Length: 583
Image (cartoon, rainbow, N blue to C red; front, side, top):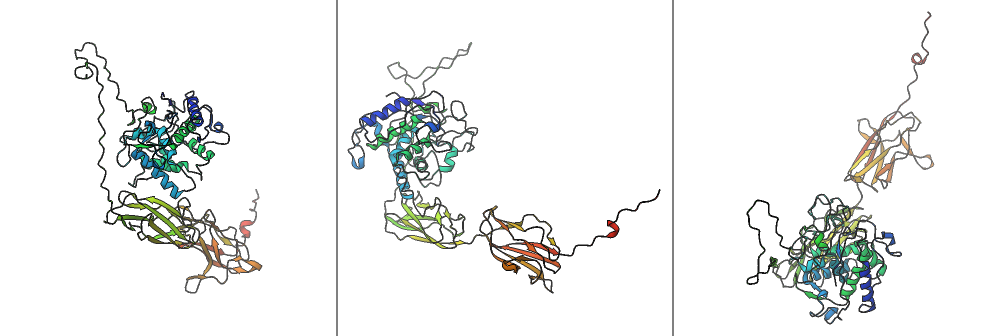
C-alpha cells in the first residue's frame, strides 16, 4: 500500500477516503468488531466532526503536527499465540518492538490500578504510537526506552501548520521561538508540562522516553472520567489527540488490527516509518528518516581546477554505492537482581503534618530491596490512605499503585488534606510479595494564617453612645494565598492601673442578641476569600482610648485603636460672620 502523509492544518490535504475505506474493509471482512469510524473530510470544524462527539477543549496533544497515514493490511492472521498474541511468523506490520510493546503494556497496567474505570487498552496506545512515530521509528530506543535520537515534529510557526510560540524555552524541542511536537507519542511541550509522567522511575519526565510518553498518553486519554470501552468516550479521547476524522479513522484501523494479534520483534527491527512520511518534513531536528540521503555533487566555481567529487563505488561494479548508516550503539543493560523481594523501607519521608484544605509539603517515598539487599526495580507498590479526615492523594484517589525505579525507590502522589483535623495513615505495600508493609502516621491541623492585615486603616473614633462610623475588615493569607476557614477571636481591651492591656469591662462593644453588649467574639472564621468582616461597634458612655484585638489561628494578631470622645464644641468666634468695616 502506498504511504500517505497528512498535514492536518493545511487546507485541502486529506486522505480520508482511503482511511474510511480501509476501516470499512476491516469491518466488513477481517475485523467484525471494529468501531465505526467517523466519515467525512478533515477540514471540518471540531463541532462538525461527529454527531454529539466533539474533541475536548484546548490544544490537541500533538498540536496537530503531521502523522503517518499508512493503514494496516486488510488481511489479519488469526492470533495463534498465548494471550491473543500472534506467532512470530505473523505479518510484519503486526510486529511491535519489544521495549515499545513493554511500555504500552506497563502503561495499561499502571492505569488499571490507579484509574480502573478508564479501561485503556494497550492496543490503543500502540495504534497511536504507530500513527504518531511508527512505533518510535521501528523501536530505535535504548534499554531504558529513550529514543536513540530525538523525534521532533515541524516548527509550528503558522506556515502550513498551527502557530504555537515557544512554551518550554527549547528544553524539549530545541526551539526557543516556536514549539514542536516531541517524542514517540508526539506531545507538544505545553501539553507535556501538564500530562508528563515518569513511568520508568529515573526521576525525569522525558517525552522522548517511550515509558514516560506511553503513560502520559494513556492518562490523557482517560481524562474526564472516560470509559474507553464506550464508543463515544473512545472517539472523543482520540479526537483530543488530533481533531481530524482522518486521524480518528487511521487510529481506529490500527487499534482493531492490533486487537486481532501482535508479536514481538527486537528493538530497532520494527517496520520503519515510510521515508515520505511526516519525519521527512520535520526539519531533521534529530528526527529525519531512516533512508540515507542521496549523494549530491556541489556546483563547481568557474575558474577552479578542483576535481569534482565522485560517489563511492562497489568493488568491481562501477555502480554508485550509497553510504551505509552506522549501526546504533546499544548501551549495556544494568545487571538484574533476580533475588526475591525482601523488604520495603522508608526512603527519607519526613513528618506528614499538613494543614486542613492544603497540600502536604512532604511526599511518601519508599525503597524496595531484594533479599540480597539490592534495589528492586520494577516492583509494584500500593499506597493506601486511611482515616476520617478526608485526606486523599492528588486526583481524589485513596489508593494508587506505582512501580519502583532503577534505584528501587518510588514516591506517592501529593497528599491533599481534607477539611477535618485529626490523624490519618499512609500504608505502602509491595504487590504480589509477602513482605511486611510500612505505615506512615500523618496529622491534619486546623487552618491557619501566616499574615493578617487590617484592610482600610481608617480612623476609629466615636462619640459616647454612638456607633463607630467604619466597620473593621481583616484579611488573612497563608503563603501569599487567601486563607479561608481560619478561626478567629476578637476582644475589646482597655488598660489597667499598671498600663497593661486587659479585656475591657466597659467601653466599645458589639450588639448581641436581646441587646446584650459583647466585648469578646468567639467562633468567627474567615470567608472563602480570607476575609473577616466584624459586626458594627458601638460606644457606651465611657470615654477614653481602647483597643480591638483580632487573633487568628496560627498566631497572627491585629491591634486596632478605638477612641471614644466628646466632640469639640464649635467656637463662636470662628463660626460668626466676619465683621464689616465702614468705609
